[in-house]
Image 1 (cartoon, helix red, strand yellow):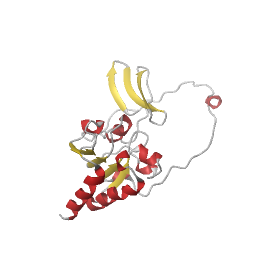
Image 2 (cartoon, helix red, strand yellow):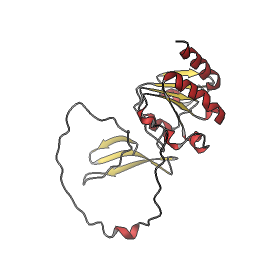
Image 3 (tube, one colour):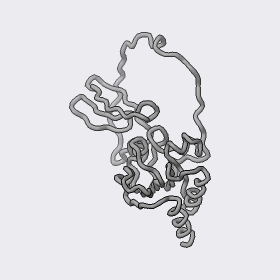
Image 4 (tube, helix red, strand yellow):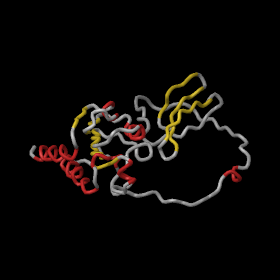
Length: 206
């Protein structure tokens, strides 16, 4: 589950992802008799305003023979990346606007100047230009850096789901109608291949 639309009595309305994040489905579940809900890591910020309370009640139910409903295929080791983008305070995230794998160095130079980490949207991972551990979105990582720079990222629903709750979003895109501008705190209409080197140079001169 990536988001909660609302609660109506015993009905819980949620949004979930299917087909590797390519499809969003709106689901209404009857939770009056209890429910098990699986949340994506980082989907919601913890409530630290008060200590947790409540009690635990053990319940059991006859689910029948579950072994007949499943088939073991294989164990796939999780990919270990060179960085953990969920720990970075500043992310320079690139999308299709970077155009070519060789241009990733432009984003890396900006990240180095800012003390940031380079992340990306799904098309960059699909092209095998960066490892999946750097992917932001519902089929990648959910992040909440202090500053998120979306460079050449249009802002699909799947990508926006991965940055929900980020306190400060900067969008740089030459398409002023890109959805990313709807959630950005600062929007810059520019070609990232021209703008990022200029921004890097300006930061280095400070």
